[in-house]
Figure 1 (cartoon, protein in one colour):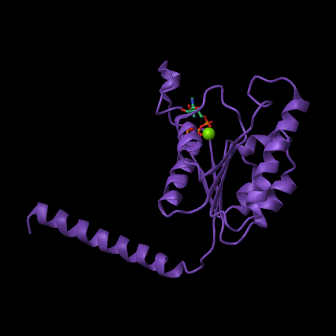
Figure 2 (spheres, helix red, strand yellow):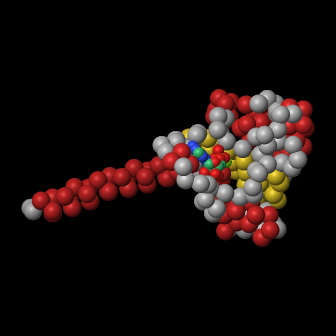
Figure 3 (cartoon, helix red, strand yellow):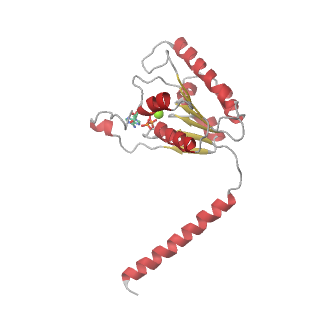
Amino acid sequence: MSSDAKKEARHKLAMEKQKGSIDASIAAADVERGVGILLTGNGKGKTSSAFGMVLRALGYDQKVGVIQFIKGQQLSGEEIYVRDRCPDVAFYQMGTGFTWDTQDRSTDMAAARTTWEQALPMLRDPSFDLVVLDELTYMLSFNYLSEDEVVEAIQNRPPEQSVVVTGRGGGTRLREIMDTVSEVKDIKHAYNAGIKARRGVDY
Ligand code: ATP
Ligand code: MG
């Protein structure tokens, strides 16, 4: 056998093995219910991944809610798109109050509470297939919202509903109760090389 043919045969064997193990885990996964997903870590890709799932769900005409716990200085493209062109998506962004610049804890806490009160009815409504709680982790790390209350609402959501939480940190409790937890690792970011945040990519 030539060395190319040997390589080919080895590759084929490896692929067959991999397929076998993937098929086995697909067959073993037989529980049908909504999933809880935590996207955390210091790298770029948490919110954009959450919005990727929003698109996926919309592709199947599912009902989606998006609640954002931080008011950006600048609306991101996906926010503009969802707000203006997806009237079926229940979209709420923390209004006045919290930004990274505010110094007023009581205003921030009130804004966090008001925003959480938009999320709560969604987390109780079985007609929602997907609820995104973008940047929620900060509300927990600053103690603006009670972790017990948040955990309880996520755990008691309708069984068919999936929920995605994004933000750095996240805390042990959230990591425990979610079914899928991904940590996006910061290897490098263009910003640190002096490249300006890019429309359509970073916001
Ligand atoms: P994205 O919205 O792009 O998916 P993210 O949700 O993972 O990012 P956030 O912490 O919410 O990250 O910050 C959003 C903004 O900050 C984006 O403009 C993103 O490019 C930028 N950003 C994310 N991670 C880093 C990093 N490690 N260094 C510098 N800027 C970052
Ligand atoms: Mg984000």
